[in-house]
Image 1: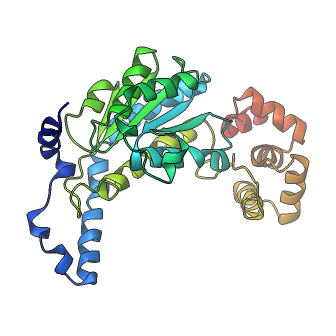
Image 2: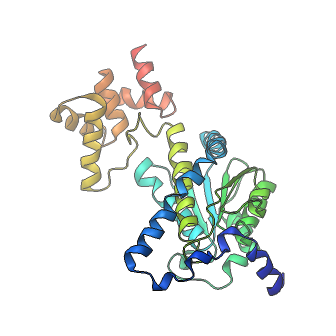
Image 3: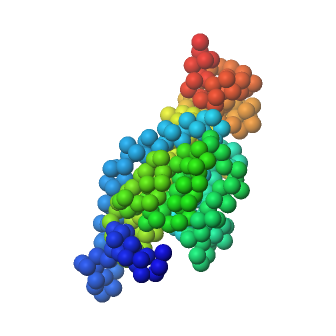
Length: 307
């Protein structure tokens, strides 16, 4: 595509539009700029709400594949790629996901997390190679993320994944995007022009973060990584998380501190079996066996213990 053609294409995108009412932005008082930015940000949840049915359908499909051993893989460039890597990196401590169970690919590789890698977002071949390097299978789910919805890296990732039989989601912030068209599950959160024209790390970035939060969090709920709204699969790797694990067991069972501490010690600090041991009156080994039999779903294990 020529530079002129690309300019024409970009000019048609809502995320690239310049708001005429903000032409004097740099002359406004700081507080007024902050108010304008906040007012714009406040419109993002409404835009996301319009896509909730599509997000929910994507989550159910992703969870079904992950329950069969598949992975959740994000792919994007720039801000979108960084947000995917961020979401993936927070799943192990929050939900105790296994190595690589949730992964993030960013155009340009790890270097692109902290600096701009020239031309990386235009490298469709790299997207295909990055997915192949992960050993992509038909059980996996690939979420392409791009504010414009036309980033070659994200579009190619989705196209390649779909051709391999993987589940695909296209998350964009413009309507009728190539990314959404390429995906089995299109999600287009149209947030409109940015405060700074074309700076899609703003409203578009916020929208993407909200949707990625939904995708990973609700998928983990469906996989039994929570009990009610409690993080019963939290990985207690530091003092704060160990204290949180203690509090979660106490909230879930109503047990006294000494009982909670003893249960966590018996289960090696694992919250789920500790809750099950206290709530069902079983020992740690039985709790582990019941959880294995229920596929890790604590509520189902509790029901089995009471039968």
